[in-house]
Image (cartoon, rainbow, N blue to C red; front, side, top):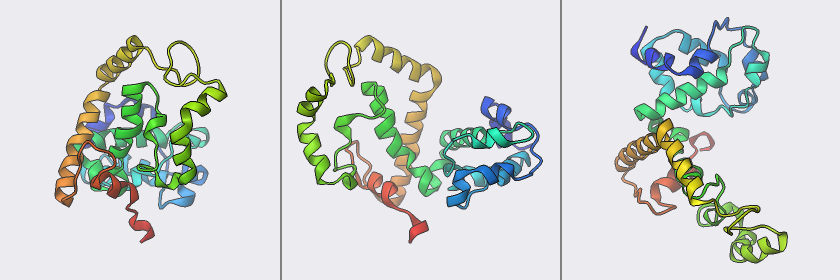
Length: 233
């Protein structure tokens, strides 16, 4: 048994997700991602089950582990009670911890997710922060969204929302004591440390590519990882 498998085996998601795979391929047959990507959850389970360090490291550095949508359709069909989706979660987690995520295009997108959804949740209490989704970061939203961004306060009032307001209501401001609890949860669960790790290895990769990775969003590195897709080239 390799050291990487030992690390993986400490993750409860692997313990619950990989019991005794017989490589029947049922998970692949039901998997939505397998229909659109070069992705085969059966093969991933087989590779992890090999307990071979070289094979597992290749997975941790690959595009493959980022294709899963975590829909858990595999769980509903496996005759042995395996859940490749949970195996993927364990692989992704270890890939982030070791910095291997930065070796693949889709893995490098973890920085974009950390600096948007992750930080919005940590700083504002919402995984989708209205003021953060302008066309500077999401140009595909188009000019109508520019108008929305300029007029959202008026629109929200007309819709009966309480955007960034005190008290109850849709999109209300989250109380400071609640935000303090959120930050504490991040610290105790290791999410704060995980965020720092993602920043660390992303910075190393940005330096390797000679791209700016400042705190400002978007920057050269974020733009690169969000738009580069060699599959379409």
